[in-house]
Length: 305
Picture 1: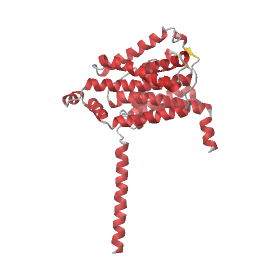
Picture 2: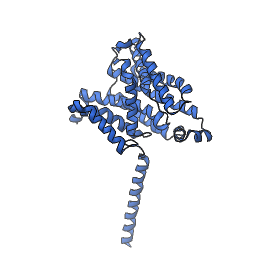
Picture 3: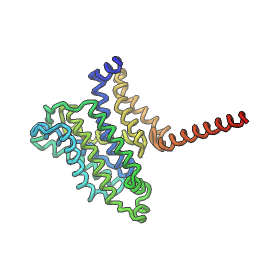
Picture 4: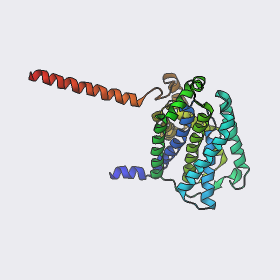
């Protein structure tokens, strides 16, 4: 028990696990937009930055409670996602991706040119309030929320849009409204992740939320398998921890990292857990065990006769 407690109390391990949880919460929002709804968003880091700066500025200037700041950061990102969603979600595929990518760059440039955000020098002095326990609780709630959405009427409508938008519209689904709701909800989770990130790193710079961060988040979702919550968890964990495990070969780290990504694309083109339905898998295991128990019981009855 002391060994386990010591493991989690190690500052380095604690920091890496907390950061993994923050990225997971953010990636779950992108999972809803891209994995379930099928709308490619390349600007998720921009919404993460809105949540991060909103929460940080509230903490620095108004000294409001930490969790309230994180929630307000999520709401601010969700509101911007809602406003962006109505005009941009009429687009599809590459056009939507380019629009979200451009919007994220606009947000980054705005933060660079604002005095209140510290400009290009960044925003320092943010109190460290994000802990592993807080991130773990919010991550579990986020996962439960994703499963709830996935199994709801709303989630089934989103999956119908992903599979065939025209057919879904013909069946009476208001596709634009559903896509905007999914986009706003996904950006809300990005804002929550951003608020936690700001109070973990204690320093924000617009360069941290550039194109590379957006593609990093997209990689988390794609590597794990589009449309799969366990896949998003696995993809985020693997890609966040891989650079840490490869530190002992830091000269070749990016080379090994790239080779692993290429192998994954060759052998698992749909992601590590893409196409794996854990609910169906567990039901199959349960049915097999139940059938085996019935056969054993019947065999025992025959012997007694």
